[in-house]
Image 1 (cartoon, rainbow, N blue to C red):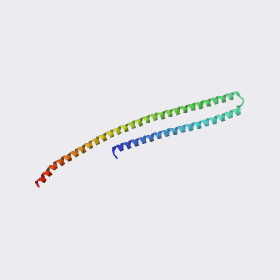
Image 2 (cartoon, helix red, strand yellow):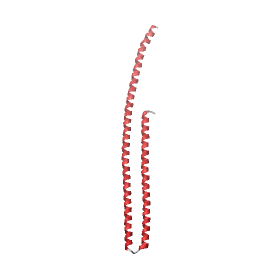
Image 3 (tube, rainbow, N blue to C red):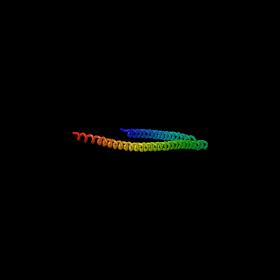
Image 4 (cartoon, helix red, strand yellow):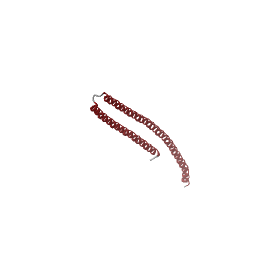
Length: 166
């Protein structure tokens, strides 16, 4: 395994780890949203149950009395306002979570783009170095071939002189 492969595998492992981390964060946020939704539903059920029970008691005890009817109306208005307030708070929380998710997505996209650019730069650098090494190797092979030819040329006249002396 050469350096290029190690770098690529290293970057791949880092990208996978970052992706896993971001997936874990998204799952955690979804779990928190589910918990908030569940608590909201339970709270609404409690409020509705209390409201219905109080209204039933008021109707049974004080039916026809204006003072108690006004009190029940005020309770209804107060409960409606409480429900609207809780709904508004939940909407704000949901918007905040959505904003955080969008920001997280933007940051993640930027990091991935930077990483892709770095990988491309490394690939270009590697290709350039590879071309230089090939040229140097080719030059060395040519030089070696020339040296071998020169050595052969030097040995040939000596062999011819040795043959003449015999």
